[in-house]
Length: 156
Length: 256
Image (cartoon, rainbow over all chains, first blue to last red; front, side, top):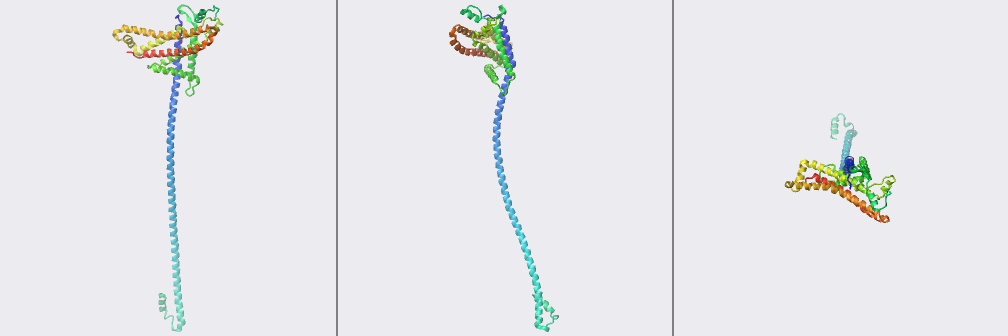
């Protein structure tokens, strides 16, 4: 056990190594480890968040699917209603048209009947006059009896 | 045996326990201790500094993981024991643990390998294990002691420190007794710290040398002792580190 100047040499080595560790080994290592820790924590948090978001998105998509289905059903119902309504309207229109056609036809018929009647009337009057002329021959003067004939024609 | 000395047991042992020296008197320098401890330290700490400089956050390599594991283990020990705020404690503890461990590890190199190799170059004495040199262990413990004292004054202030020295543990009335106790306590710290490491490693080395003297029978004996010694190597490095942390935490906490 002889203590000598080696002690100072070793103390200097020791100081140098402490300095290296203090300055160049521990701080960067600590920083790297802290950063890694932070990164892992952040990654885990992000995973958790993503999981939640996925859940939310699933819920949202289910919701919107349900909405879409309801809306589609609504649209279909509306379309059906509209279809029925259109058919109804078409029926109505057709009926009106048909009535109109029938009415005009009836009117025309009535007119023609009226016309035929008027013609017939005049013919019957003529025929009656001709018959009367033939029966009566000279006894009846057309000019004298014109007033009476006209009266007759009116009565027919 | 490296030189042409007589092959007696005591000569062999003495030969193995003699340092390679330069100078004389107090200014003798143990070259072997200085060189081996310096090379080991440079290898470890410069290597670690280079590794730390390009430490990867996302893809730590195997070596980086190992260094990180050791450092964070030491850091955990320091955090558990030392509650002050000095940023020096963890690096100091890391330095002590790794350096002492590596120097102790030299004990596992068979006792004759390096001396015989160096004898080829005319170097006759070479103690490979720097921790068997009390100069080194005292250098460590006295450095720790100095840091401890500086921390005492820094944390408590000079007045607070002196107050503690004179009043703990018996109060102001027994100031001289307190001072005496404190002096004994503080002297005991570096001495026990250094002698514990020195004694363990010196004895371990001595056992290796004695085993080496047994001729053929050293073969079955050297291995179990080496295996057992791995435990002592690690344990002594850990104890030195741990006690340093404890002393520093004592220095930065008020006893009163």
